[in-house]
Structure formats: structure tokens, C-alpha cells
Amino acid sequence: MKFGDAVFNAFGPQNEHHHAKMRSGAPALAWVEENMKRELQSDGGIGWQLYAAADEGVISETEAEQLLKAVFGAGFDTTIFGISGMLRAFADNPEQWQLLRARPDLVESAFEEALRLYPPSRFGGRVALRDTELGGITIPAGTKLLLMWLGAGRDPRKWTDPDQFRIDRHDAGSHLSFGFGIHTCAGQAVARLEAKSLLSALVDRVERIELTGEPRRAINFQAFGHESIPIRLVPAG
Ligand code: HEM
Image (tube, rainbow, N blue to C red; front, side, top):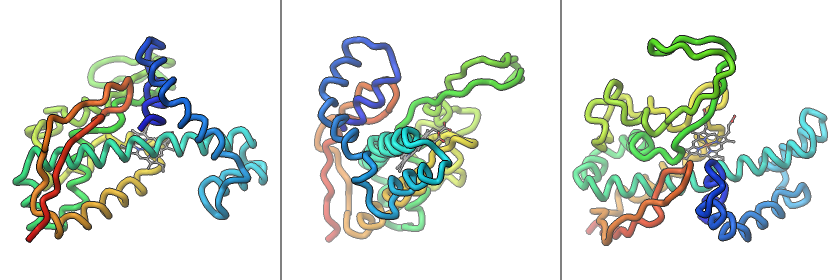
């Protein structure tokens, strides 16, 4: 969490909040810096493959290290926020948990629906390569764009009852919470696998998911999630 706090709070003004998060995240940042080194990568792993690409001259050594840090940074708090947001959504909507218990085939769409409602990444950036007309607005070439994944997930022109958590939406997976196009999330299969594994394990074993206190939102310039969601898992009898 402290690592992600530092990484994602770098997407904003360099104010006291930013500096505080960089200070508290410093040990985690140092750990990551140390552990992204070539000699510490496991054979055949992502890090190993990136350094192998550097050996082949496809990318430079520095790029391999930077890319490895990017994969690490992008995959940490995003999954924490995505999975915890999903548990909160179930605690807030107990009938949806009962629906999942009755229909475990909805496990995958439940995670998609949670990501639509609580996208761990608020926004992404793009630059228009050419003059573009979008929604009646002309975007001149060279314009920097901030794409709001969070707003897109609640757009009433696209979603019926956008603030409702409904795991049986037929189009749950068409959210933009993993971005889109050539830079769409490179780790989405990993994220989906993590969520599916957890939900599949819980669905038979847990009767109810209950809040035991008030959830607290994380204050973060880019990531959207919770600092704490106190919940109780009530075992199935
Ligand atoms: C629920 C979990 C996750 C969410 C919601 C998420 C979301 C995103 C989003 C919105 C983007 C930007 C896409 C765009 O600009 O179109 C992105 C990029 C990326 N993500 Fe994820 N992510 C998650 C998990 C992961 C994991 C587990 C990994 C790595 C194992 C990962 C690695 C990356 C990388 C490397 C990029 C940059 C891709 C590029 O620029 O080409 N993400 N992610």
C-alpha cells in the first residue's frame, strides 16, 4: 500500500500530500529499486524475460529495468483496490452475494462489474496524433487528453442505473477500467485470475459479507480505492 501510495500520488501537484506519501513510501520504493536488479530475477520470470530482451538488443538495459518497475508499480495497488472494492460492493449489496452463491457462473462478471463501479485507476493520458472529431468536439492534433475511466464507468448514456452494483449485467466487461487500445492494461489477465481465484474460493464457503465499520476512502491523486474496509466473512453453515 505504501509503495502504491507513493507511485500513484506522483500523478498530481507536488504538495504536502504528495511529499508525505513519498516519505512514507520511501522504504518500499527503495525495496523495489533494489529488487528490480537483473541478478535478483527468477529464471524465466517477467523480469528475467525483460533483461533477456535487453541482451538481444530489443530494448536497452535501462529500459528493461524501467519496464520491470512499471509492471510492478502498475500491478500492486490496482489489484488491492479492485478486489477490496469488489468485497465492499458485496457487503453493500448482500442480495448480489446471494445471487452469486446461486449462480457461481457470474464470478467473472462480478469482478468486471466491481471494476466498473470502483475503477482502481481514475484516469489515463493520451495525445491526439491528428485533428479528431469526438462527440461534436474538435480535438486539434497535439492536444493532451485526460481520459476519465472512473466517469466512463458511471456514464448514464452507456449504463442503466450506473450507480447500482449488478453482477448479472450482460455487458459488465465493456467498462474502460483497464483502459483501451494498444496501451490497454498489460496485466489484466493476472488481475482477473487473482479475483476469480479468490471469489471462487469464497462463494461456497461464505454465507454473507458484512461491513463491521465505516469504509475509509484512500486519498490519492490517481488511484481510486479504499484505505480501509472493515468486513466480516460469515462462514456458510
Ligand atoms: C484490477 C487491477 C488492474 C487495473 C484496474 C489496471 C488498470 C490499468 C489501466 C487503466 C491502465 C492504462 C491503460 C490505458 O492507458 O489504456 C493499465 C496499464 C498497465 N497495467 Fe494495469 N491494471 C490492473 C492490474 C495490473 C497488473 C496485475 C499488472 C501487472 C502484472 C498491470 C500492468 C500494467 C501495465 C504494464 C500497464 C501499462 C501498459 C502500457 O502502457 O502499454 N496491471 N492498467
